[in-house]
Length: 414
Image (cartoon, rainbow, N blue to C red; front, side, top):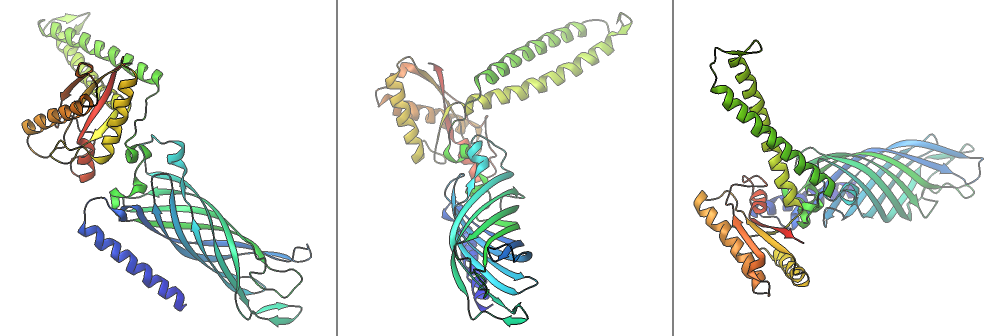
């Protein structure tokens, strides 16, 4: 019990230190990779001899805690402690394990371009050390007790689902198989006795340090700033539908204008002109909304299939990883001289519109200069600045503003 209290105190101090660090620094930092999980549930154990003459199974409570560092949206490393109070018809026992776990985000692994991050699916193999002993075991009318704990190597395999209630908290359900190398985890004084297999089911609650900045809240696409190409057929279908919708809108707008020039008291096929105008206006309004929605989707699809570089706040200084992207782009342009590109510059929402329009144009020129300095002809590069007019994220958060400070690089000819 003293060990458990000490462990709880250490975790509390650890969490407090992390929270304090977060308040001091609002920028994404090391703590944004960490999370802590509380676990509670049931464990089913199989115990007895290998022979069929004596075999039992029971269900008992367990609880524990895990501290995890997430390296990227795919992989992490955790340290887990689980404690069981095994209660059977034959004995009571205390067991526990300390495991090193290797969580894998299956949802991001199988769908790296997904944007909906509310639900995650995980598997987590692990390896560690366990201990166990029993009290008040009775067999053949003779009461026995353990004189200490046996130790063992434990191997685990977990799988579960996790739902993000908020950027800081998630709840989940987890199932785990646990194997012990030492079958005498509970040292029953019988021929080849003991426990080797445990099956657990737990409910979890996770606190993610850094809130929205935490790596567990990001898709692989957002984390690596990679492009997720839209399926070619889907893109062509979208562009075709967009064209059809725009043509329909233009036709209805023209019919509406023609109808407005008619006498409102007239009728066509018994239908008053004013009612026709009302109906046409309703159709035009709805088509306009559909066209605008599709226009935004088309722009997003083009941007997702393009390279993007990012900038420091209120400047033309590129972020460190953007230089890698531009270096690779320069090599690509050198190797294929048929490629031409368009640069679209953008800013966050800080400052006035005119200043940001100029800044977006300066960012376009900065990217163009970088490529020209590396031997790319400026005739192959065109550019335009859009200022604050086309944000891809909220300007109310530092993370959103960082995503809006960008230049999108679109391939025009290939």
